[in-house]
Amino acid sequence: KQKQEQKQTLQQYFNSQQEELEIKTQEINKVSAKMNQVKSELDDMNDVIHREREDLMDRIRELTREIRMKHLIID
Image (tube, rainbow, N blue to C red; front, side):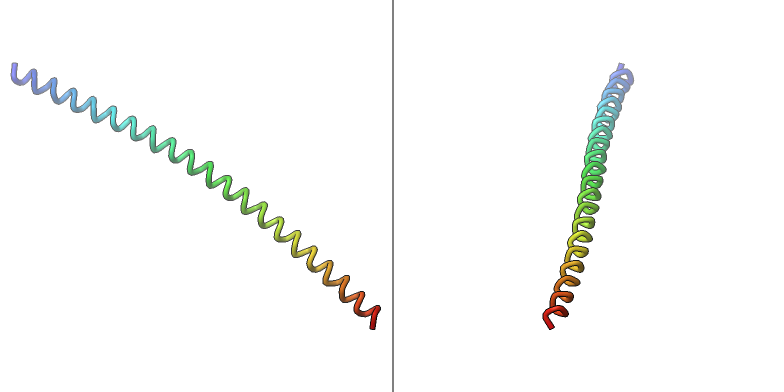
């Protein structure tokens, strides 16, 4: 009878440990998915910033050429 009770206690402990492991695994998967989503959004934002920076640099170069040309005309 004592062995049976011990076995039952161990089974309950094992089941609770298994359930805890499953819950924590699910939580890890959720956090991992969220992290991947945030990483993707960050990469997208970096791409947008890079494109905007390049566009602004192109515009600065264009305006600089125009200013040089106008200075040449004035001179």
